[in-house]
Image (cartoon, rainbow, N blue to C red):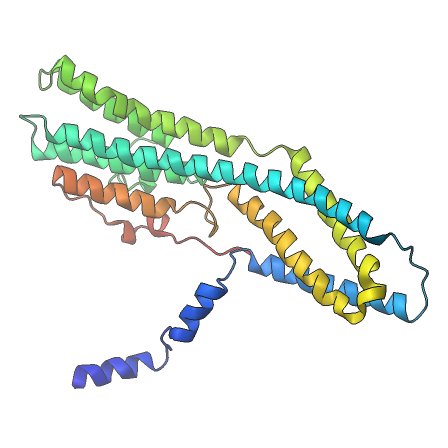
Length: 317
């Protein structure tokens, strides 16, 4: 009874997520780009209302361009948005597949290290630290925070490489080669593990290619030009017939057309901290847990104690 009362008292200041909130999230989930989108939609409502006033009261002579012009504009704009959205999503999905490959290769190399006879727990832990550290180093590298000392387990490392993932992958390959030279593993063992170790830098290079190769500017510019022209002319085409409902009609058009464009802008850069970007922190944590479970080692400090590792995705607007 006491614990229940205490729990209820503690929750009074923080209303629980009730059924209504869950239903709202299921029916109308919040968009990560809602701030910018809502602001632009309100501006278009104001602009449309001004157009209606100009058409209805002062008697401005507006040319009757008719529905064929509107349909033609919509078709062209639809094609541009479709291509833009597909190209942006392809970049996001390729990034997700690359990080999925990194998870698989991390697990595979740890499984093969675990199967090697004669290795000490410290040696297995050293490999585990490099494998888990590579994922965090790559995440930080793609987000512009490239210090080796920001990687869990390497806070006191004396090295200051310019390319942290390259350094960690080199340390992993160097460890395997040192074991072979010392007779700890055979050439066949090294041959089995080498593809997974090399795959780390293959993933890194592919991610860098996505990050350093933005979508062609001409495609983005054409979509923006089409959106501006379409939304700027739409109120003038329907104001005389629709009247003050023009604002509502244009608001719906603005919400969905600009929503697709703003989302594509976020999605085409998949390695950032926006809510539409890849959950790299969660993937790094998946790799860390897999390494610990596979090799039976403890990797400290925990990710939650490191700001760079545990930073949540920031909502955009």
